[in-house]
Length: 565
Image 1 (cartoon, rainbow, N blue to C red):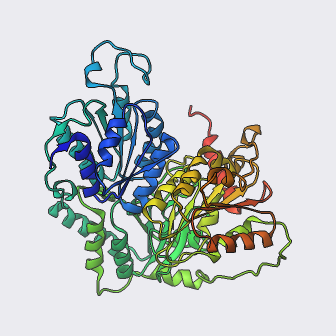
Image 2: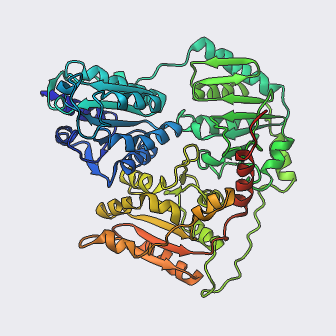
């Protein structure tokens, strides 16, 4: 088989497990899109704009392990790079491919359309280098294979996005055939000597403590260490908590799971246990102002082991070039058959942790809808095959309160924190995993940024259930710092689905202002076949979780610190 640069790229996409790639057409990438269409093993999926295209690929990577999106030069890629920044922050290998000017125009002195009006076309590559782990420009077919392979290999190994820029007149040029995909997929093994030393250091640290706890962070998935964390918890028998952004990264039905550690937004009794513990094993954690509630809940110091994707820190020692899963398995093996380090579990049960008091809802069908009832409705439809996307804002805390059966997943974007992220990301996730019960909880303000991708859900008949919280503004910003800029123009959110449906769509838009209306809407959503169901949930502006209020106050305090003198 003869290969071109474009078909080479398509073959690599298919070989790394991509069944889809996302695209927005533009004149610099049209020939490339034609070439990609030649490969029937990787379907082309279209998005409404380039920002959404990037976020759709980001969501696909959450479900599939990797993703790709294809856009045009400058006007397209600069928009998509916002989402690529999110993929970098969230440790997701997304390959951004951009069509680029004709190779003959480089250094020609020509000023081209879709550029900033200079004769230097390298600015996009320079920007991309700041937001990716590898960025390459292809202006000849001769070196295309090695550049493509370098970008993809680096993205897969580092779990970060990569950037490939291809001149528009090079996409269809012939090039060498791809070699075995194993060269891209095989990752270097942990350095044996360093791994042995790290396992010994962590094991010795734990042996010297009486009351350890394990804290699970959102980088655990990128490290491929979720199963290893379970084995460590089984071996130690101590309490295990997840950070806010890591919900579902450790099974909630595990005997040692106690909930979320998030300052005043923590699950009941979790902060009490962390205050009582004498040590913390922080696995794949990201400590930022959001996750530490304005730096008020930040485990650090000599009694904290920081075990990251490829670096483990114990006291004054740092061990590099080792995989987190190998470290955890080594420590678990060390403690296998030994007395459990379960003092924190004993204390947790002693203080009443894990005892759930279900408060009955004393409400009638015609009572006004509340945030609490929305959360109860969400809880009632969660199954082991469910994935919930929680948009930035009070959705974080509503989803955090939800109890998950094993197999259910939660997705946040808490490091990048781009409001509106969840709509296109949910679209991409659902493209990869349409068989799951995919649920999106999003606020009205966030929805207005990226609503177009609901139209793509309609286009592909994706069965997504959307709880859209209409509370007349940016509630998360209200709790951090209120002002008139937090007010938004109201939309007929339920009615917008008819616009997306046009003549051939099967999506449904429903509106709930009472408890009974929401109950009926949820029943309709579960029974609906073909396309998304958007439930517009109308609640008062001040009806939010107590966690958001407390969290917002602490973040506002951190933001408002005066300049250091």
